[in-house]
Length: 457
Ligand code: PLP
Image (tube, rainbow, N blue to C red; front, side, top):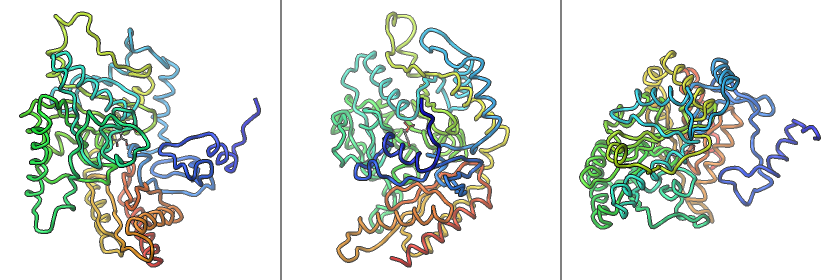
């Protein structure tokens, strides 16, 4: 075989010609000008020219312990040499068993059973399929509809995309519309002038109950909710919302799936945010990303004892939960997750996040004084800056917002910071090991970029 050249031009060429990226833009297909990440260490990524960039989004909200950890590399390589694969169908192995026990200990309440998946979408898919299975086994074959929310993101498989409330306006891909009902945006900033947060919360709850009654509680199987809507723009629902939506689910016998793909493993300073931050005990929790700090792919769906009890054991002979993947409980991914959790524990990274997040929030909110900043919001080590611009000439507000966002992204990168481009929003979820000084550097670059772009506008 001809040896492949590693030059940046060749990589870009091969990447454009042969690698179809997630959310590939069809207009630029084959000619995109992507930065090439060459290496990474700590919170920094180095590009093809050796430029050092702060990783603002922490990979894709997943790099908790930072890059290039030798102890992680050793754990992965040791497991590769010991047992690189094991079929999860009929045999067991140590890493997934130890990890399942560890997750059961870390998760709140009776979430004691873990179904391992390949990532977040398949974890969400599994939670929804488990709800189908559960209701079928209980003879409630019509109780399958999922309640979700506008701006929610739950993944990219057919089912997880169907319960995703973002971009449902686009009709380029099909989704399972009949099985989903969407609730309106919970963003407190959208409340009409003079409406208190409590009134906003009441309105959201009233809407949810009305939708349940209109659809029929006997037809709704689950409510799926991210504790904070991450990809939707770091939307934090009003105080009391989580507990009250859970109460409504209990009232109508609807399963509560807390999608913690972003919020688990320290992003909000706790292993899981559902109980420790928002005081709710969900029926299922889905997680992925930070479970391995992005070193290897892995996801998990945690299931409560209460759900398994009536559908397992005596009387359920020859019944199978026909869901699973070749890589469910992959030993190397699970060994990476165990090492990741050990590092987070030993280095007190959760405590570090709790100690450092006031600095993060202070710097984030200081951006509000800059021109063209409409809003900032965040919690723990996740934040969002939203631009505000007026329409001008023949450009609509939406077009100008998009253009402003793109320019800020570009400028940040020139100045040494990767941001997550989400239209006119910049989203931050840096590696959890970021220091105070590095937080200051990150926001200094962002402020400078916004200032420079604002003067051009
Ligand atoms: N759920 C949430 C809340 C997410 O943010 C994501 C991805 O960003 C997913 C699910 C899908 O995870 P994955 O991309 O690992 O399939």
